[in-house]
Length: 497
Image 1: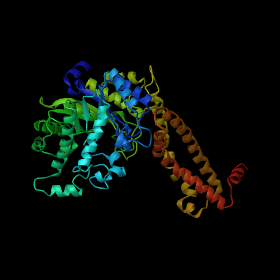
Image 2: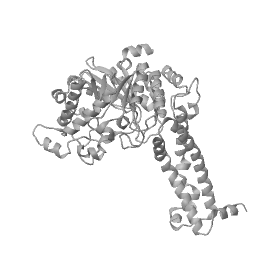
Image 3: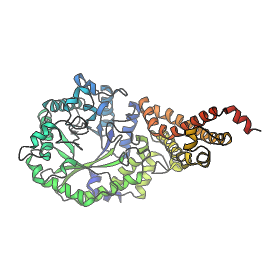
Image 4: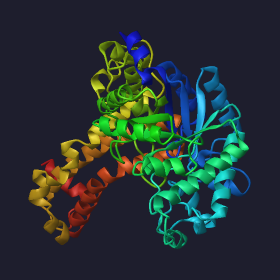
């Protein structure tokens, strides 16, 4: 029974935060409001908001604002919080403070703050200016989040740490290590936060702590300042290893802990359509982890991450409408303790669809009551993706006519049999026209939910690379026919004889 699962499972009882990654495809504010209501309807208790360059930083930090599209205004951010609080959702801002600092360190103004010049993601931990910059960013964010009682400071994947000139000098001193270098910076940041906001709880990603001993963590002064959040997005995550890590953190004195799963954005860097089952499996594994913990671990809850980019400079992952089936399913999985038939029924009722898989196009639009916000876009993206991934389109250049009469050798020498050129043209144009029609639908619908820059980026990422070879092929055929003195109209009239 769902009730007994909820009573016995720490993840069912704990907080359930939906991660909103705004460093790519930031929803228009009206759509964002709709999503907040949906998150609440689906069973979330809070939102972990990663603003990056969509926050309206002011003063010297204004340079951090996105130039691809306008950042959210102060009024927008206040309205998001008001709607969230009206639905009983807490807002936890996430601001990176060490690694994944690309949106800051990419600017020439802050280039000197990089640990190494060719790594845009990692801050030099020896720079007092760097620490001051981080604390000012946190201050501006928290000043717009007066009701927030928790802050996430990131601190994951601090690549190339220890490779900078100052770090190498520091590491040459006996007793110093990269682990201590990491802990020193995070402790400095956490103490700076505690000094200004004494009652604020602070969360950090755990991956940089994993290789450390319990004593190393205990001795650094971090205990009592932060709560680690263990992240693992694999559908076959190692249950025993994660339990071992959480018990180690407990023995170091970090009793209050979180875990982080994924509902989208963790399959591949360029995935377009989310697989619900993959992400449900990830949550089932985390339920096993939670059930295997000793009583001393104070599990606060789980963040269901929905990455929109792997980092600031990577391509877009699945858009939010493509991940909502997965999100709903993962939340119901947590609430029921497993992905039961009852849980699946709740998902379909909440979203107004006939399936828990967004890729199940035949049952996707079998709405029972209402469609979820963004459903139309999800439907046509799935349709377009199926067209773009079809064997006929992907392997058009391997088709009989192309391989037989317009091979690379023919293209190089610009020769082709006009009769077969016409057959190739007819097939290619048929594909292009069908895709163009669907692309236009996607553009129209996506423009209602996202800025124009997101629409352009999505098309350039998913559509252009597939169509360009076909367009180039047609261009080369046209050139070859012209060189042979045969024009399009000539070949068309000949085929009619």
